[in-house]
Amino acid sequence: MTQVSSVIPLEIIPSDRAAGAEIRGMNLLEPLSPDVQEQIVQALANYGAIFFRAQSLNEEQQLTFTRAFGDSIGHPLAKVEHMSFGEGSQPDVYYLKDEPDLTYIGKNKLKGAVMWHSDLQYMPEPQVYSVLYGIEIPSKGGDTLFSNLVAAYEALDESLKQRIEHLQCVNWILRTMPPVVHPLVRIHPVSGRKALYVSPTCSRSIVDMPPGQSKSLLRYLMRHVTLPRFVWRHVWQAGDLLMWDNRHTLHCRTAFDLCERRMMRRTQTAGEPVIPA
Image (cartoon, rainbow, N blue to C red; front, side):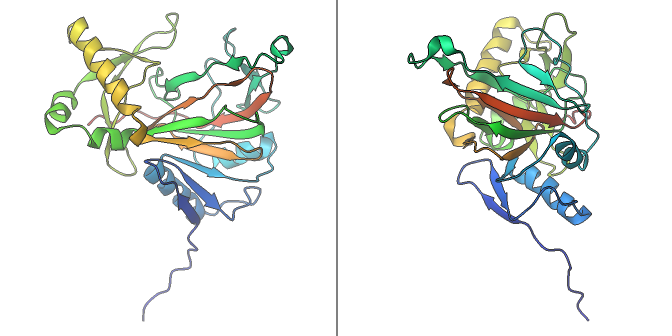
């Protein structure tokens, strides 16, 4: 007798780009079953970033959702003076606050873009998942872009893949923090696929490679991973919950009008060792 599975598949709508998918029909205030958790983990491995529209979550509820996928952690740069983090009332909850500057009313002055990066790449064990909830969204701009680092790796020619597969890269974000070394090509533990692990924000040099060659290779790879064919854009709506897998994506934020307010709530899961190719 054939056993019928009781697992109800999530309604996952992939984007038409190399990354990104919407999950529909879920109220994230409801507890997540193990089956649903596993489907979300698999969706993140497949698409890099997923989002849920029209959610209504407070700090504690967002933390509960985040902790379904690992221990929550604080952000090591939350107390750095020039970083725009604001601490929430719950541990491990932070706000990204961009207040309107009334000096620029009528001048269409833009808040600058945030460079491509992978969260906490500069730590010995970079974080796995990031969760961002949209509270106040500007009318235009402030989008979040994602690059699929698996697709970017697989698009390289075979000779370059062989050349870089076992290289190590020095990463740091602030000179006051010790640099860390990670593989330039990593293995995603869920999919088993190889991904580039390089970003303009943190990747500084290749171990044991002459500086000129190192700079040239990193510059090429950074241009490559941000080519439009690897990139998906999330256009925010208030109430969106966006979650991404830092093990095979980069992300950045586009510019927006300084006269408008943008406020997001951020949580994240603990890191894990990077698996080398």
